[in-house]
Length: 247
Length: 247
Image (tube, rainbow over all chains, first blue to last red; front, top):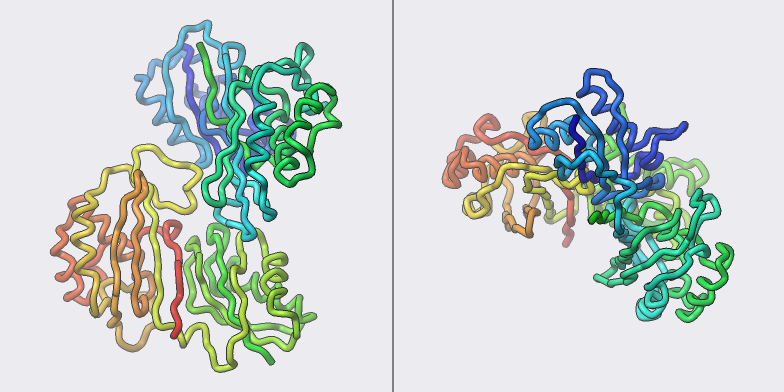
């Protein structure tokens, strides 16, 4: 029995998220369908670093599964990429020890969130960028980002639908926003992220960008430990799970 | 009665081309549906600079139509952009004299064709770039481009399905290819283009890039005035109608 770790990319537009659920097809189902076919009908369970919501994309999602097949390792990537639909692909496949776990062994994650900030829509970016017509105050959002960084209890930036039972303390190593013409790119690196945390942080930072809040409101929101004090949840289609870290 | 000219953009992925036809929905139908609604059911006919095939995109398609409505001009663009589906938009709307004709008055067009030249697919570009895994000889394709430029009879680069009755002589002012990392961008400017002409030229240039033909084969192909001597028709999804010129 060999455990295999893969890095996968997916365009989340046409999926009801990563994780298998009752309604709608998911990325996990597509992966398990292909692996089950390769294993002649024996069901193969795929474990990911974490779920992503409907419409959210991934550049560096990590999964693992166990197999009894003895394919040469270079064939795994090709076989999976060929059999998967055009909006999911495998960029790396490698053997790992049988105690590796894609979910429990993560030491950190990176997310990016893309904004198209222009009076004109860009129809070719509509599934991957959140379009905001009104000009945003980028320096104010940069100031606000500094208050996100560090170790905090992020209860205020966590969906009440979260099933996290324990601590909501997380460490954000980097929170930043870069402007490149009409594109804004938010980048978040941290020890871990709560349910909807990046989208609620982005929604709150955008309110700073619209001068509806001050950068210095962020520590106040954090302190409240109450979701109602933070901003709206930004829509899913601008969000990318960019990288998952392991030891 | 006022004639209005619009510049429109569309993502051709989900359309059976620009022009109304029996099977599948088209960009023209979407435009006429919205205009007919704005005119309380009176059918409004839209004329474009030319048709584009299924899967082909447009950045600068030009259309015209006549209206009896007396909307302020700045409202036309917004009203149309709001009512059209998310994959079609209007970037400019302006009044023109009643003898302007979007099709007959064109003096030239520009097309671009995008290639993703990498061993790895890019799933986020899959609807807008033609993915070619094998490395292409860009200098050889640049050499071949020089033979495309100028005034030639382009019968060899015209689909036999073309309904052009007259001359197939066209002038190509610019044929070029630029490399930007894993992206290749072909650019063609000319007095006019025959049916499938850009896609057949690209398909032939790619055969040069794969060393299946020499750059100096191009004049020979042109001289034959026979479609069978040129290369395959490149797929539609890499092609963009970029700009339409008028006096």
